[in-house]
Amino acid sequence: MKKSLIALAFGTLALGMSEFVMMGILPDIARSLGVSIPEAGHLISAYALGVCFGVLVARTRPLKQILLALTALIAVGNLCASLAPNYWMLMAMRFVSGLPHGAFFGVGSIVAERVADAGKRTEAVSIMIVGMTVSSLFGVPLGTYISNVLSWRTTFAIVAVWGVVALTLVRMWVA
Image 1 (cartoon, rainbow, N blue to C red):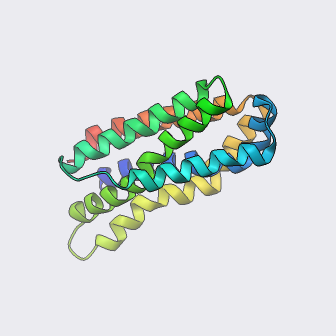
Image 2: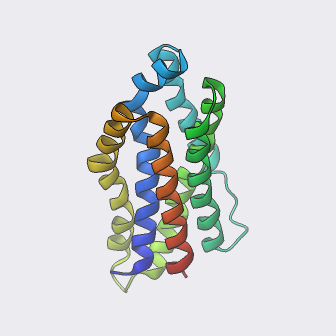
Image 3: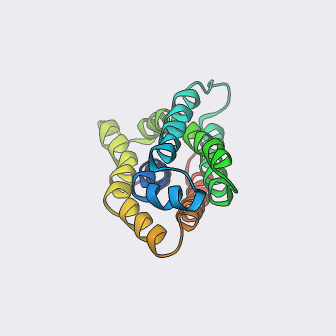
């Protein structure tokens, strides 16, 4: 398996956790920030809006540079979410965290196809997307557990660290 595909899978794992862990930690966030669970649910919508706006990234740079910027945004958005002092700042950081989502999948799919061996383009893209599956099976339950035991802030901090790992791997392994 090509290392570049592993780097892309690490990125999709970070995106999957960033997106889906909110459902499990929503009650913890609502309680911590003194808002109702339905109000806290708007944090999911903020991420979704970020996804919508993030796909508007124009391809004016080399693909690797775009991937580096997107993975940096994963890390920064989740780090800032972990440090958000109030509901509105967390809302803004959820929007920022959503920005790289769609664009990463689009650019990552192009990169995966380009590095694939002949006749293996679909397989290469599926390897990249496996990070999302792993996040759903293991990352989100783990993030929810960590939020219950420690804090929702710790969960976002861990996603930020995973984003830095993905950034490092993209820098080293994606051509």
